[in-house]
Each structure stands twice: as C-alpha cells, then as structure tokens.
Length: 178
Image (cartoon, rainbow, N blue to C red; front, top):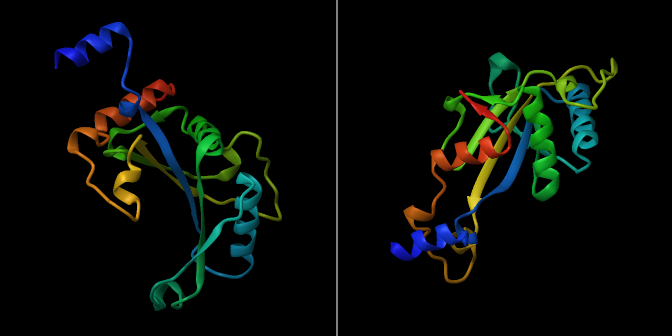
C-alpha cells in the first residue's frame, strides 16, 4: 500500500488503472422496414462515415405491424478517435449534462431526440427527422484477458470500472453529472 501511495506522490500513475473509451454504439430504432428504414440507414452511414448494421425483429408483434425477421432498426459501433469525436458532438446536444440515472458501472447511455441537433447536420426534408440512442462503454487496459480465446482469466473486482470512475471520466470531458 505504501508503494502505491509513493508512486502517486511521485506522479507515476499506473497506466493499467486508466479508464479509456471502449466503444460507442449508436442505434436508430425505426420500427418499420421500407423507405423510412432506407433513409435512416443512409443518414447514419453519412453521419459516421461507416457502414451500419441492420437489426431485425425477433418476433412478430401484430399490434405494431412487425413481422419476425423484418428489418426494424440500424446500429453502428464506433471505436477509437472516431468514437470520441462523435461522443463529444453528441454530448453537446445534451448541453454536456447527464443524469446519474443514466450512468452505470463502466457504461452510460443517453438519447438524442432529433439528429438535426448534432453539430454540422442540416435538416433535409427528403430524409426527415430521426432520434437515436447513444450507448457508451468504458474499460481499463487489460480487459482483453477476459475476452480472448486462449487462457481466459477473470478481471479482478478492483480492476473493474466503477460508477464513480465513470463519473470522473465524464467530468474530465467537461460533462456535468446531475
């Protein structure tokens, strides 16, 4: 314990304890296939400059007019610099404020009601307006140990990202947590 305290005083922070951005997942739940779904697909592709994945209905729901296997949504996963850039833009829509309720242990999520609120996006009457969900996952270095194929190992509870770590990471971006 004394060695850790001495390292902190000397300014030698352990790089394995640093919280880093793992991924940002953007989801647009259209709820129907057809023309509106195609417009949402092209919008998301243009927005993040990456090919989105199509999500399909798992079951038939007659009241909503959805059939099993029908394309009802679009999602895309961003990593690295692209993810951080989009996250900063998306947080400006929320005026850099998030509720504590939307923050968990190593993740947080929020919604954007209209995509035209994003900086640099103009309204196009041909496309319309779409809302989107933004889910962000954080991790510490070394999480690959639990996900690799060979010699998997568990991540110690002391190495997991806590809710307080997530809040500190958000505050380092300039986000106010209420």
